[in-house]
Length: 269
Image (cartoon, rainbow, N blue to C red; front, side, top):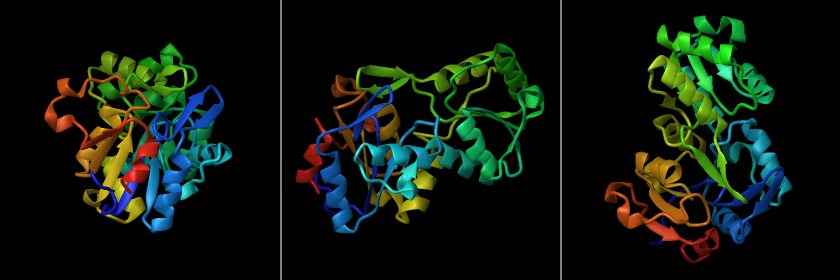
C-alpha cells in the first residue's frame, strides 16, 4: 500500500512513535524522520494519544522534550473529544469528573461545569479520565448518578496500552468498569475509537477522514478508529498488538497494511 496520495495522517503515540518507561520517553527509530517527511510534503498530521492524565499541551510538551517536534494544536487526546461530545450532546451539563488536578483545571477553563465529589449524585454526566487514586464512596455516588440517568463517559475502555517494559494497565478503564458494573450502564467511549474522536480529527486537520491514514499499534483502538472514519489503516508491530495473529481477526477489523516499525513508512510516503 502506498501513502503518497493520502491527504493527512493520524498517529498513535505510545507503541507507535514513542515508548514510555516511567517518566522517560524514548522515541522509536524512524519516528522523527517520518514526521519530518510528512511536514516537508505540506500534508497535515496529528498525534492522538488515549492518555488523559494531562491536557493535550502537556503531552505535546513531553514529546518535544523527548526530541519529537509536535505543536500543541497537533495533539489530540480524549479530553478534546470529550469536550466535543459534551458541547454537542450535553451543553451546559453538570459533570462529575474522575481525573487529575491538571485535567480538572483544563476542563474548567474550557467551560465545563464540574461538580464536587459530594454533589456527584446530581450529575448529568460522569466522565472518567485517568485517575491516580480513588475513593469507594466517590464511586458509589457516581454509580447512583448513572442509575438516575446520568451519561457515563470514558476516555478509554481498553485494558492496557504499550509501555517500554510491557503493557501499562489503564486505571481509567478500571474505574469505568466499576461504575458500569454497579450501575448496569454501558459506558460511552469518547477517546479512541469513537465518532467523537473521528469528528475532532476531521475538525483539527480540515480534511475528511476518508482521505486520511491512521497509523497505530493497537487493533482495538487505532485501527478501529481508522475504520470508523473510513480511513486507511496501518498497524505497527512495535506495540500492544505486536504478537497478534491477524488470521484470527475478522476481516472487517483487520488493518489495510502491517509494518514492523514506523521507520518502514518512509518507503510508503
